[in-house]
Amino acid sequence: MSDEPRELLRRWCRDGDQGAFARFYRQQADRLWRYLQSRGSGAEAAYDQVAESFLRFLQSVCRDPESPVALLYRIAINLQIDEFRRGRASPVEPGADDLADLVPAGEAADECELVRDLVARLPEDEQNLLLLRYWIGLTHREIAAMQNVPEGTVRRRAAEALANLRARWERD
Image 1: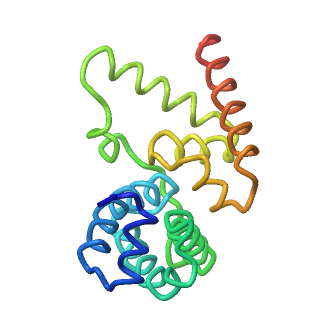
Image 2 (image 1 turned 90 degrees about the vertical axis):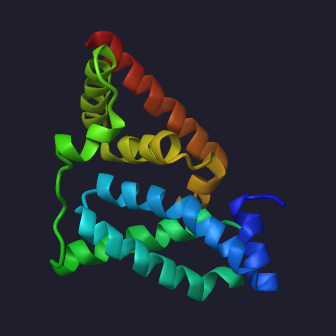
């Protein structure tokens, strides 16, 4: 049996397979939490947003299980934006402690810090695209579904963002 998100949710929607949904949840919850934190939610707010996102996701996923990961992220991003607008949460910058477990020790830590600084100087849409694609691990197709643009557009934008990052790396 496949652990591909779309197949897991088809089994859950079609057969009521709770184990399939549990596997989908385990695949996605931590990635979504990290993504929301990287977009400015504090740890506790991100946990709340993940829970609410999955609740809303469950209410609609069986109607359109073709792009479940994109749907989940769209829901989460909209929730986060709503909370920022209502003033219940305000964007926070992740501190060094928040990212410590993602950075290796030694020389590699210096390179990770440099890459993080270079990415932070990219336009926000490029930062978000690189985050979704390379840190969270979404496919071009999932990002395209999430942003309602053609997959080729996402591929082109990702290539441009990487080229921009590479140029900054070579300059610095």
